[in-house]
Length: 158
Image (cartoon, rainbow, N blue to C red; front, side):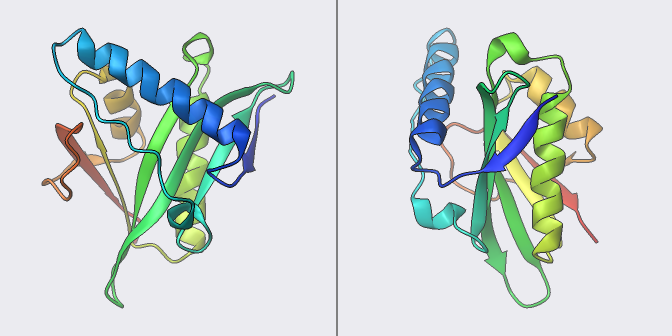
């Protein structure tokens, strides 16, 4: 049984998973002759209610995944949060834990009255795209200048 814990993004456990995530993306991009730009997030963007960072712990107490949401827009009517750094260690994929993380982050966004959840990804991450589509996300227009992204998704929470 896996469980989700919120942790400060600068916590050593969270930081270790982010390092793995960024390293895996660097390798994946290198195989495509593309450069990946790693940017460790500032703690403030994942501090409630601006956002939250979570770590997925497996039944044996090992940290096996992570992800976060951060508020990127609030104009009074629309409150938008962005999913960031959703990652599972390769040996744990296919167990439904990516969906568990994504559903937890969506629940947290709804708790903060979010009206929309957005994310970006790279076209080479087909399994991730499948997860996002199955969770109700649809392709949308580019909403940021992330140099690592080639696809943008949105989900209405209304």
